[in-house]
Length: 266
Ligand SMILES: O=C(O)c1ccccc1NCC(=O)[C@H](O)[C@H](O)COP(=O)(O)O
Image (cartoon, rainbow, N blue to C red):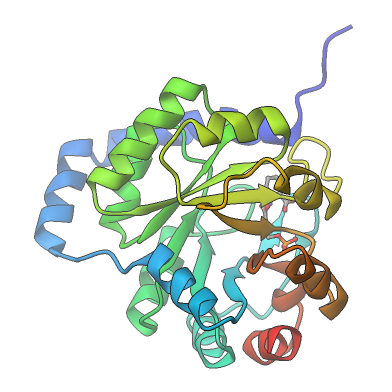
């Protein structure tokens, strides 16, 4: 019997097609020229997180996403610039903007607009598997990229990580299990994202973070990702000395996402 492809596999397969389509429209050389012409210095994503942690505050990476494969449309009234302003007011350390079009109804333009609107560092939240997307991320103004270990062979992970760093960006390396964590720890990373969502099955459990914590060296900053909905979830994480959070849905469903952030975290 044939194995049914998981959602992550489908997303990545589509991503490779999308990259070819984009390369046909705009070459990697043009992207490099755009980066030069923009003359933009990346904002310190890790630095913004460290600054919150240094004040004993939670560091929140507040996500801007309209829809997701597991939840469908999350927010009908979707104005990324208004949401960014609200998050800034609510005390976010950084922003995460979904740029994947097909599965998250995201857009590169959302990231560009958001970054012009607020001075917070922004991560490009996408499924990055090719150099082209790393150059593209910097060309549209990303300060950080996400690299998902489950999508990448270790050599490619390391190559993309180094390329992002050469371009001045920070990197959030995301894992979901012990084997992926070991792969991530081979790299000189500062941020390790633990996704509580299994991207193959959509199952979410905060135990994913608790179970992996014990093997993470003290010099890493752990970012717990997905499924953070309540003040109790946050207290449980902080009780385990996890103080950096990537939060999407629970903020996106609020009338005022930044107000909700402040209620949950402050
Ligand atoms: O959310 C999904 O359905 C999903 C499916 C496949 C790959 C990635 C997916 N989501 C990305 C994320 O993990 C979240 O956007 C992020 O961690 C925030 O999660 P949440 O606070 O639960 O919205």
